Amino acid sequence: MKIDILTIFPEMFDGFVNSSIIKRAINDNKVQINVHNFRDYSTDPHKCVDDYAFGGGQGMVLMPQPIFDAVEDIKTKDTKVILLTPQGKKYNQKMAYDLAKEKSLMFICGHYEGFDERIRTLADEELSIGDYVLTGGELPSMVITDSVVRLLPGVINEESHKKESFNNDLLDYPVYTRPADFRGLKVPEVLLSGHHANIEKYRREESLKRTKERRPDLLEKS
Image (cartoon, rainbow, N blue to C red):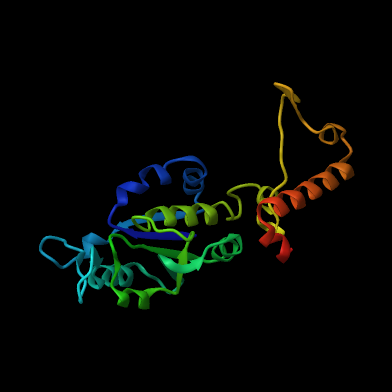
């Protein structure tokens, strides 16, 4: 998979692409992540990418020219262009699986007060990672990229993500490791029994219980 990220703060991604599973996926040629500074595409002598909004109002607005030129230069026939905005559809695990099937993704990171409305015409989809506002689209692009890359074949063990939270509309069951007794907090006996059928039953029940307590809206779907 190829992922292109358009931003005016490319330095924010230095740690992201050079750490943990993302770095390993890049080194193993499972994904190619390119971070582009769309300021480089500005035709303004001072490389300006924002201006005041017509009609007045607070804050600066990203201009269409640099972003249009960047998208048109980088995009291929296989590219799905995603605009990151609080007004987009709320992102979820099903969307992560869908995006992981794409050959190429492009994320446009907004910033400042917003972006010129005409920039929306470039996007195949608009996504939000939650009902709150951030200073820009950089963090959402990292969140979505991370959630997608880990689903690519060979990045992590497939069984690891098949039983995670939000698969089958349930939260994940509790897990434990050694020691079996830590400061009086003990691992449930069933997990030490070696009885796999009982363990699976326990995990299913705990998953349902946790979902009912924390996300009853998911349980209604399940």
